[in-house]
Image (cartoon, helix red, strand yellow):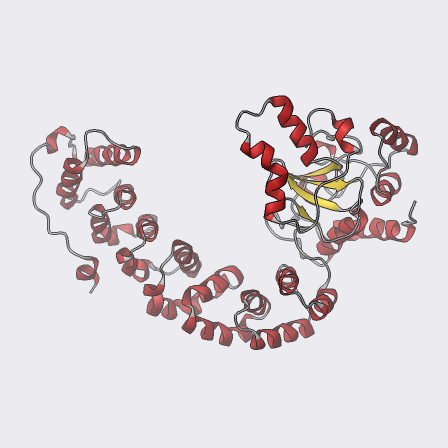
Length: 466
């Protein structure tokens, strides 16, 4: 058995440091496990388990449960650990394979780091392509798929982490999804390195954030280590992974920032690099963001929304000037979230997007206006929405007008009702129901509007806001 004495002692010390660094239990899962680990298991229990399943546990994992601890007070009595913690030894072993666990735990693991999509599809082929697969054959295929993997902790929902029990990658931790999305190996070569990295990233505040941080899905290391890795790496994909790991840090050293800045000057098409610059020194990065906004305005807004959303006030005039360049829904959402953080009345800024060729954008603009406190100011916009050729836009306009008692709306409601077919789709039925509901504000019924609708003067958006 490999001697992990020094690392075991480091981990024990770092557990205390991590608990002190996260006194408010902000790290994902910490509010459940509270950094508690119960006393270690016994060598007899480990030997009994290994004999029962005809396996030899990886030395790194065995050292953890024998010398650090086993189980705790977290989810399903998990010990302190990444996500929802580390399962008590010997429990939840059938989370991946429901039947014949003894058979498959000792089998060779078929998963490999950085496996291709084609390779993963090949492993799943019999399950995916055989629509009449029996329950027994399905369990057999699952057994092959997850063979040689011991589940060791939950990440929430259908996600968990397991440890490879045999073969070339024995001792490695792998992130898994019971719904069979492609697995993702962690970058550390054994369980203890993975666990210690988790503690390091709590202590350096990388993981002190709201919600899951997806720890272990990217490259690990402190600023100095990541800089060295980046400098020594020649593979473009690997360099990109390292850059993404830097982006996840809570803080980085000055010399790392300066290095990234020089890299960005050399490669201005690298999105991750400008994100790093913006996140860690917005004032310095703003000159680069202004350059990006002239070339690719939606991209600049994406960077700001993700890394400097509190600086939105500085970009209001630029947004006004370039709002017409927004052509996809995600770009609109970036703009909206930036403007929402400014706390200004931004309805006027997004009005031009009512003429967007993208249905989702028009629908979202109407929805956004309808949620503003001063939405009555945008009655003309909702009237335009009522005559839109998209049923989604029409429906969102009706929702926005739910409390409006403006009589000018009645002929518009009448026109829509007369345009609806007898056999209605779900969205058409929702439109009819919304109109009927809105008409109650005027003490009117659907039947009261059966006469031929008046001819309406449907102005274009620019005629209202020219």
